[in-house]
Length: 272
Length: 262
Image (cartoon, rainbow over all chains, first blue to last red; front, side, top):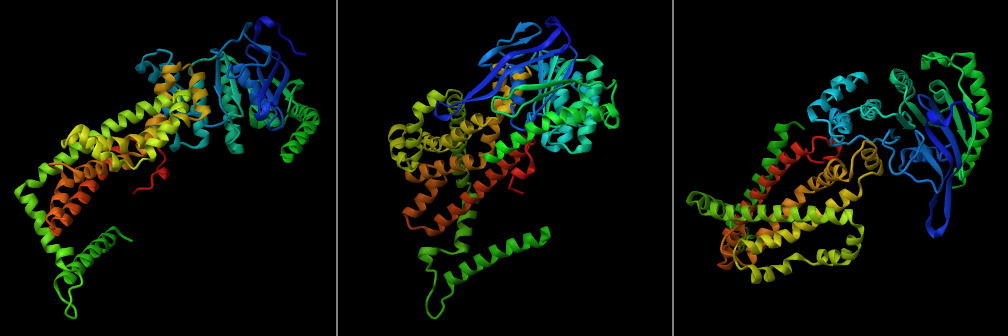
């Protein structure tokens, strides 16, 4: 389905199935036989209806979850334990509320054994990079949602992970802030082209950002049901790329597939 | 309401109450004194007693004893509560085994332990410290236990993904969370440390504010009892102000909305 041989793949999911045990010995299969390959330097967006197990895929790649069957390979080595090469930007607020912005950014270096002085110097550079140099001493609750996401991005990127996992990172932000954050992300990504796995429920955001858009079916037993290459040139600007004719035709094409799943997912969640 | 008006109204309440007390205790209405001095004393006598305590310097010894007992009870109870709370939260099996006993011990009204502590530890400060410890320990213990267990899964996962090992998770995630819960109960636990000390003194001792009150009561010196109560309230308020200052320093990262106090 996609180009690139196994040797250069950053993340490979091979028939990965994830099941959770529910009360009363029932088993809920969240994701069924997921096959996905993310090449080095590739930006892949995963789109699917709410509750379809998109985050589950990320947790698999992060090593926070083990597959019930199938394998996860990271740079061609089977993943056992946590994925040490990955940075994870969570959907929920994940900054440490008792640390200032700069300490939140520096912590990833400090726990890796970098001296506090140097860690702070590098954290300050990252704060400048995400445009929050003036907010180094603020605690998370004193920052806006968008600012917290920027700090979160710096917190993850300062460790220079080879793989970036993002779980609806801009979900709670307003539309304008999302676009600004999207551009910031693309700018940072262009600098060193990490492999990115970006989960979102927003198809437009997915097309605007990614090289490839992967569609998941509604759960339970969600599968990957579509994989599109985004033929838009880079560097892109999130504001302008939406005006492109190719953007619209791709959007229409993917939406044709996604719509059915979204309705299905919606019906299920409405059933309770 | 401006600060000045508020303050003057607050002072007014005290003035009215004291004036009523003084009036009803000294002036007879229709041939009767509503607050017989034997049972209610009067503000002048009570004030005189307080002034006497401070001018002769007797009170300092008792205040220091009570303060020292409270501090010891608070420190020992907190250390124990933090240690056990942390341990239980990280070892659910241990917590499950001890759960009924913890509940049982906590259900016991601690005052009934006072005679036993006196028996074991004598009439000195340690029996009072022990009583305070049993009060402080459970508050701190439950808060720390809760604090460690309720660390959000996202924060924990984020710590792990940022490369923290188990020890670093403790230090950077669990520990601050537990401490913040402990500090949020600081007013309660400090208050209980004082309660433990004073109740312990009251039930049997040779010094302290509780002793002072108990002695006065023993000779029907109502002025002395009231004087002791006022000194005790002032003492607790001063400690509480101290706690608030400490709290402001330590919990700067907390959103202000969580703090109900001005």
